[in-house]
Amino acid sequence: MLYRCLSICAVLWLAFGEAWGAEQPIELNTPTGVIKGTLTTPERAEPAPVVLIVAGSGPTDRDGNSAMLKGPNNSLKQLAAALSEQGVASVRYDKRGVGGSSAALPDRTALRLETYVSDAEAWVRLLAQDARFNKVVVLGHSEGALIGLLAAQHSPAAGYVSLAGSAQRASDLLRRQLQGHMPPELAEQNEAILTALEAGHTVADVPAPLLALYRPSGQRYLMSWMSYQPTDELARLKMPCLIVQGSTDIQIRVADAEALHTANRACGLKVIDGMNHVLKRVPADRPQQLASYSDPTLPLAPELVQAVAAFLAAKP
Image 1 (cartoon, rainbow, N blue to C red):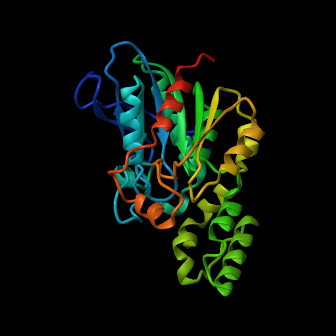
Image 2: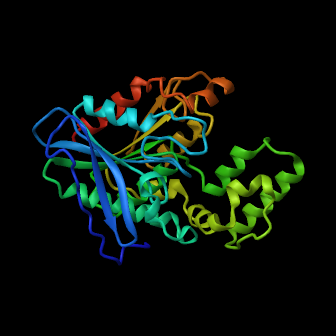
Image 3: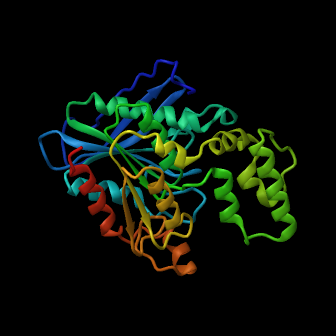
């Protein structure tokens, strides 16, 4: 992978000493810049499990918020706080090019999915060497589920959690999510672009309404993402794993979770009734769904934290 042959020096920086039960900054130094994150620790003195939380696609930051939305939902920040109450530490971070890690991506055209995977691997190695933690589990949300899965395969992770992860190849996921949401002519152009990217060809002429998805600087990244079939990758995983999916998620279906489970029956499967893509309990009503993406006052679905905590507590 992009940085596997490079020496990544991971440096932990705690602004408030060795105190537990608090949020503290943490940094990962890489050859192309610093990746910044937040360490949340529980109120306990003995070694605790630590969860590496990998955020979803695009400009989604460590807290689960996207610059493309009108406000925050704080889903991943809430998850870290809730896990802390269960005696579990966590690290969530801004992917390179996002938020506090913006400067770590000097050349956006060079970004590949493997870049994010290598960064996640480096975080796992850092945490696995920290005596305060007794095991490291990777939890990936949405696109982060695939990043986390690939990182778990090649790192000292002790377990893996897929949270609202797709079972489909990225190009097929885009097809499904966009189906019925654009006029016929634009839909034909979208399909032509996807077909070209699947074949390994960039597209110079992208219609304005599709530039947010297929901007030229990001097409190589999309091609790298499309090269992975999540069910095939999960079938290769040889560690404890858990698949969690909400029943009212308008982006990823329960059928995705079931397909992932079929690919690896050793994984646990938890479908949470009424949980949507940003991990909140929201009915399957599109206006309420969309509003929840920018509403930090909505609490997490409590079954989510219960399921992850139970998975962490289980013996291998």
